[in-house]
Length: 179
Image 1 (cartoon, rainbow, N blue to C red):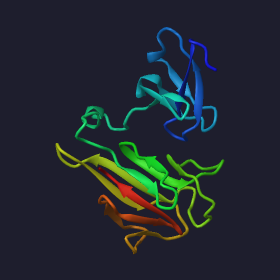
Image 2 (tube, rainbow, N blue to C red; image 1 turned 90 degrees about the vertical axis):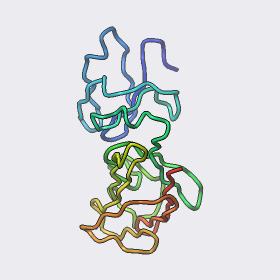
Image 3 (cartoon, helix red, strand yellow; image 1 turned 30 degrees about the vertical axis):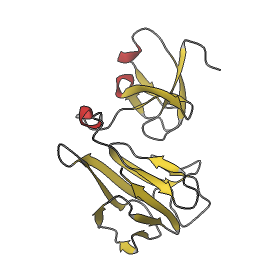
Image 4 (cartoon, helix red, strand yellow; image 1 turned 120 degrees about the horizontal axis):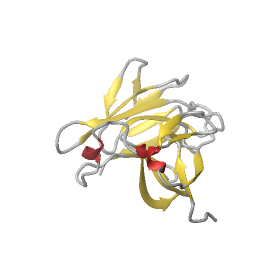
């Protein structure tokens, strides 16, 4: 149980949950993750309703963070086809990979499938127009194939994801949702 002077935040680099002492002027301080050693200014975090044990999460990596706050602009998510478990994406670059103690993926997927790399693919979320965001998938540091709707993604390919696309990371199947 946290006291009133501590908060939990999620490291924007490795996703580790950090306990930070809430002190006056914290908005001007830098936070260093003890896991990946990344230093981020506290002002790059936003407060949100506590879920998955954190109270703050990283702001979008783009300096134009306000474009993602509009309710009409929704960042997509990946859904495990077998279990229905959802993995939300963030604006900016999302590295998708298998959850492991040594994984540095932003989106760490709970799977025992060793064909999914710890840094398997990248999904970049950027503003496409005033009314929508574009989600672009490309390979990251994977050894096994990434497929979108049965099409193999080559190492230098990237593809714009559409709602309902089925993505195979190695042999692990997920669905992209953006509605």
